[in-house]
Image (cartoon, rainbow, N blue to C red; front, top):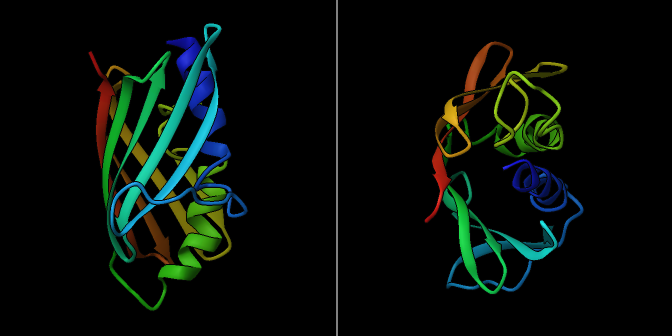
Length: 158
């Protein structure tokens, strides 16, 4: 699991969280896709993140090892509670928080840290379980008003 975590953190920091990362060609109609390659235990590893929507979205992250064997995954659904604030929340809270994945040892390295503050924005992530089987909730507040929420779950794939 240690090698998977190291790869997953690197992949997350080099895809959606990194505002400069390029999307890959969509695999399904209407999807936005990110792709990252590296290795886990000396074997080729692939991370793929695909989602649908904008202010209300659903997506999935999958890690493959070797040929094309999926070994870990996460599903997520997120939504904006204030569409006028959504783009600024992504730029000022979500992406900067997601770039910190793995830095907070008090929370699983699935999204961002348990708390991140950037001016009037406060990002929080809480999760339960282990990397094998987990659930989590991510929130963004602006001036103490909840403006964004994401629910996720996932774990090992066998």
